[in-house]
Image (cartoon, rainbow, N blue to C red; front, side, top):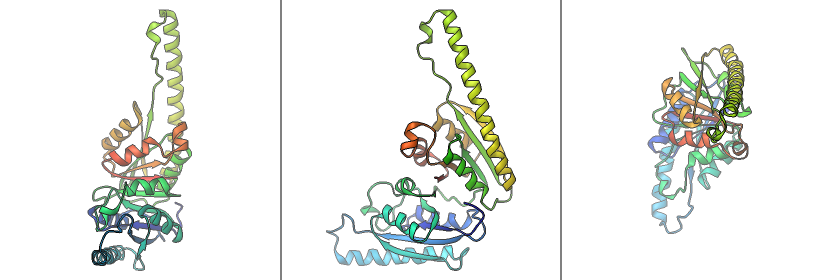
Length: 293
């Protein structure tokens, strides 16, 4: 997200998580000139047996949700509009985002609003899977975004996450911790080798790991320089172990309020599908998650 005028779309359903998404949107450090639009989805999927009188109550509730969201957004954007639209929830949000030209979709981590009993699956996960540019999944109150953890693996999407952060209006004292997790070479059957061969294999594996660590450090420093130029204070942390576990542990250790990730990583499966690291982070992260593509 460059330092230029852009639009964000905030989806809410009136639940505590939906309200948190609206509130977080007003405090997130969007660049100057950003516009805001809101959306509340009205869906009748799997609801053919619901009486019209009940639907009338639901529609009144949704109109109230939309107006309350508009009032909150108006604290920062006087021209904010919140629309009530029809359709399957995830598809409707994604279609509306394209209609209004939104570069970022903001959603709560999960919803329990007036029509929650009609929804199937995770709205936030569906939005992240289908979004074109970026999604901010708000967890908890999510009102402060001064400390950010950037999960970085050197992939193009991870670089875009860094560029997104560099394009924000850096808050006072803004700090980004770049977390790079390295998986060490596994040598499952080395103990069966003669000692000389075993030592040679282990030495070769150590050289490979050392080279990978040096490359990771160089890539992280390149990203750090971009973020420092934008005004962020930056630390680089290299961790070794299981990627998701170490990423979340590093996020907790640096007391981050936001975890930023690229949608796809370098592995074959992550190039084809939304990465398991991202989905794991969406389910297990204790803080809000920003995902870019």
